[in-house]
Amino acid sequence: MKTYKHLMELYLSDENYYTAVRDATVNKGGRASKKACRKRLRESPDKYKAEIMELAEHYISAEHHQIEIHDGIKRKKRTILVPTIQEQVVHHMVVNVLKGIFMHGMYEHSYGSIPGRGSHAGRSNRSGRRRKYRNTKGGKEAIEKWIRRDQKGMKYCLKMDIRHYYDSVPREILKQKLRKVIRDQRFLDVVCSVVDVRGADEGIPIGFYTSQWFANWYLTEMDHYIKEVLKARHYIRYVDDLVIFGSSKRELHAIRKAIAAYLQDKLGLTMKDNWSVFLFDYFRQDGNHAGCFLDFMGFRFYRDRTTLRRQLMLNICRKARRIARKSRATLYDCRQMLSFLGWLDCTDTYGMYLKRIKPYVDFHQMKRRVSDAQRIAARTAA
Image (cartoon, rainbow, N blue to C red; front, side, top):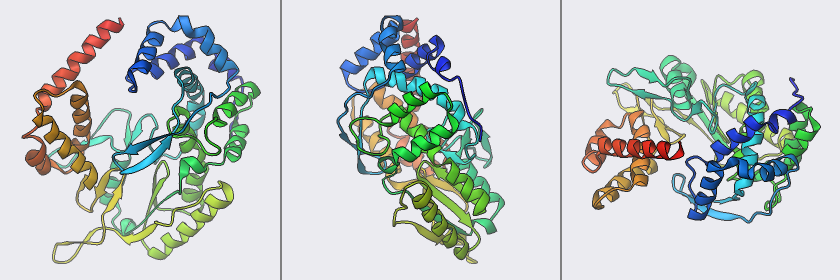
């Protein structure tokens, strides 16, 4: 296992500080008061440098209070912690150093909150070909490639996830893993202080920039165990959601039991009881579909097409109708609909777009408004 030394100098460097300030303050939402604080920090980073660098060198977590939010995509409530603006900068400084360490040896089909990897990175055209975005990998593209190239290996599907993953990560095991690779004691102390956040008794809090990196890296050894020891044929992970394809149910059930044991014995985690092994979508002799589609990463995967998850599709249609009822769409509306357009553009939903989206939304006008706003913001920042 590769280890890393002399990290504190990189962590406390001026370049790392200014990069972290930029990343922590650009295009962030929240209350008006926080937006104003971010703007002051972005415009005058030297004014706050001594205070933030002192916090970075001798990091102690602030006292946080849990906040409950509603996840509109998965339709469930989540509990998060909100870091202070100074903490956000420090968290970005920490991740800037850890990023290269965590990416080293990371499983190629691990997606979610990882630079250059997303749920989708390509779009379909009418010829059915895929046009990849530069330097990006997409989980959607990986699954579609497997479906096209290995029909026998995609006969059955195992889908499972981890129970209360973020809240359940044992901090001591996470810190033990960090000690194995980080040999700079001063920097290790800072990282461990970030892990031991106040406001939650256990786990890594949703809402912290560091948590998404810890969450992905914590399962890296399990990824290699699944591929190299259990010999899973086609395996993909999106944070704590796992999908494995195989040619037999017996094989997938054996893999599921082995993963459940590994999670409990090695990582202190528990698999949810809602796991399933099912016959993946296929064509009967009469040409009709049989089996079950895969609902994963916001998509529905079939043998011959990929569509949107039903709830996501409903959200897009409702948003389009709400915009149509307004006298003028806001800039936020434009940005949100353009984000939705990315989902529509890479799925086989053109008919739905023509019927339920296009009559209500003018995407060309929205693109112009967002582009104009970006140019004005760039001139103001300069």
